[in-house]
Each structure stands twice: as C-alpha cells, then as structure tokens.
Image 1 (cartoon, one colour):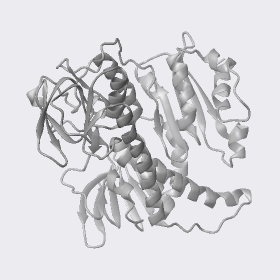
Image 2 (image 1 turned 90 degrees about the vertical axis):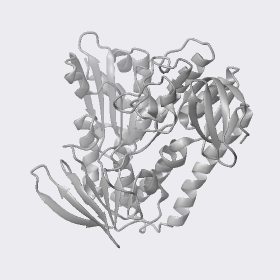
Image 3 (image 1 turned 180 degrees about the vertical axis):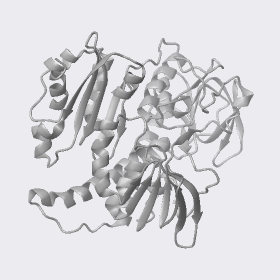
Length: 462
C-alpha cells in the first residue's frame, strides 16, 4: 500500500478481475498506474466473496456427494465427518493464497496500490480516501472504473443472522437444518447445492416458470432431475410476499401462480435474486459519464464512457456480469489507454453454472436463435452412450450444437454434464475461429473422453 500520489497517467478504481487485469496490462505497456481498492490485496468480489470461495465449497460438496453415490458402483464409505471449521479455514486459505499472489504482482509490475476508495471530483481529478490516512486528491490523465457489483436484496429486507445474501452464505457460519433459497439462478443453485451436501434441507423458490432463466430448457432439465433428489423442494412460479426474522426461525409467506398463499418457517433464508452494479458514490455526476436505465455505465467498443479519458469495464459496464468478460474488457481498455488500437467484440462469452451436473454455453442459445427467427439446425447428443460418462458412474449429460442451416456455420454450443465448464472452451474457440459443423466433425478427439461428445454431436449435423 502506498501514499496517495499527486498525479498518475492511469487511475484504476477497483481491483477485481477487471481492475487488476487492466492495471497490470497497462503497466506492462509502459503507463504509470495507480490502483485503488478497499481490500488489502487485489481480487475483488470474485476472489474474496464470489467465484473462488464458492468453487472451493462446491468442491467440498462434490466430494461429499461422490462418497455417498459411490455405493452404486460397489464402493462404500462411512458417512463423512465434516469439520466445518476446517472447511471454512481451507476455503479462506485458498482465497488468501490467490489474493496475496496478486499483491505480489502489484509490486512486480510497479503499480502504485492505494488501499481505500475514490470519488470523481471532476473529469481529471479523484478524491481518494485511504483506509488509514487523510483524504487526498489524485490528478489523472486517464481512468478506468472497475467497481464491480453487489447482491440485490428484496425490497424492505435487511440481512441479518438468519437472512443473508451470497456474501453471508460463503462465510459458512453454520449449516442450518432448513434453508430457503430465494432465486433459482446460478448463484442460488450453486450455494444451495453446497448447503444440501453439508446437510441442510434446501428449498428453492423461483418466481419464473423455470430454473436458470435464459438457459435452454433441455439443458436445465439435465440439472433439475438431479436437484429434485438433492433439494427438499423446488417451487416455481412462486414469489416471496413477506419475510420476517424471528427468534429462532424466519417466517416466510409465499404466493403461487394461482394467487394462493402459504406460510412456512425456515432456519435461514438465502436471497440470491441477482446482482446490481456499483455505480453509486463515485461522483459520476461530476463527470460526463452516462448511466443507462439498468444502472450500467454506457461505453463504446473501446470501453470509453462519454468522458473520453474515462473507461468502464466489468460488471458496471453491462451484462453478462462475469469475471472472464471483465478480463477481456480490461485488456481492451488498457491497450486503448496506452495508445494502441483495440475493440471489445468477442463472438462468444461462455457462461458456466458450477452445479452438479455443470451447465455451460456460449454463442447463441437455441431459444434466442428461434426468437430471432434464424434458420438453424441443432444436434443434441445425450451422454448416456458415451463411454467416458459411464466409466464415471454417470448417465446424465447432453451436448448441443447450433448451426446456421444455410452455411453450416457454428452459432452456439451448449453442454450439460460433469466437466461442462472445461468442455465449453472448445466451443468458444470454434466460434471465435468461425468454425463450421464439419470442422468439429473432422477434428480427431481423444477416446474415451467427454470431449468426444462434441465430435459425435457434429456427426449428427450431416
């Protein structure tokens, strides 16, 4: 951590995946960079309270589930003895290892790191409030805003001991006997899976007619069949009317699609209804930066805002709110700030749901393609005939390819099954290289692997 410098060529506000990636890239390109963030080390929500701790806990859940399910193939274990304190400690160790590593990169890349917050005084000056010192001003030639997002809460609901958001859930203070997850999106289903594996009776309530809104239904069905066995209840087309925290429980009033209400009680409630960009308290009103109706900062293809020397990247710059999207935007903003030509125009940004089975997709979904009235062909390959799937003791999974019916060009790839998050990278590369279905069908894939499902699905396009 450094004192506030008087001036800098590039100020980066926020040290999450977008912020630290932009800072390191800009420094490598020769710019004098000042990176500002409240945490001791870079990492942002992703490393401290999001992607990394949640995946660590999902690994624990996977081990528990596999030990339980191994009896089907003749391997029996005693019920696992879960040391919650050690699980929590291990999760924190993973986070510490990664964030401290980034702290080392700050020094290595000669980036000035200021632990604190920043607010625009005008289009060329920041008011910086360090965590352990007096407020000062930082003059900048260019700036990148990368302040990320935070969980959205239900109106009028406050977090507490028994009602928490994803940040609170990742603390893993205890494993409640019963847990209601409000929201059937990826955050709710991932964290719900963790708590179910650790012993909670998990119920999910989702106001729309299906889990994972925006994902193709045939993919979701692969996951839902498994969650129906893991969760106590999944309530669709149902909304929460009232939450009331009581001494030992949370009283919940639910309303179904018929308008009928029911009263339930749960030990704890997790609110996982989405995230909202952190654009408040930045002093953006003192600049020409524009914010749209959804609360995102408006940017062009170079990530520039309406104030040309100020860029915005990551969650505050629009959907999808994913760390790897922020990495891509960070590279563009840093290179443009350094005087290079760059534009953010990916053909495919992958989305991954790290449940069991995982679901991943990139490019156009089948639903979106049909809504846009694009003439498409699809190839859907169930995994139950794949040798590697069966040797893993699984029969669930599906690979889907979406191609333009006119020219065989690949438009979208989707995978549901163990390891889908790894497999989707092949789909991303294929889309970026403008591959056609025949390219996948002629590329030799190793046997026996799950990657063969992409090869086999492509054969179905003939």
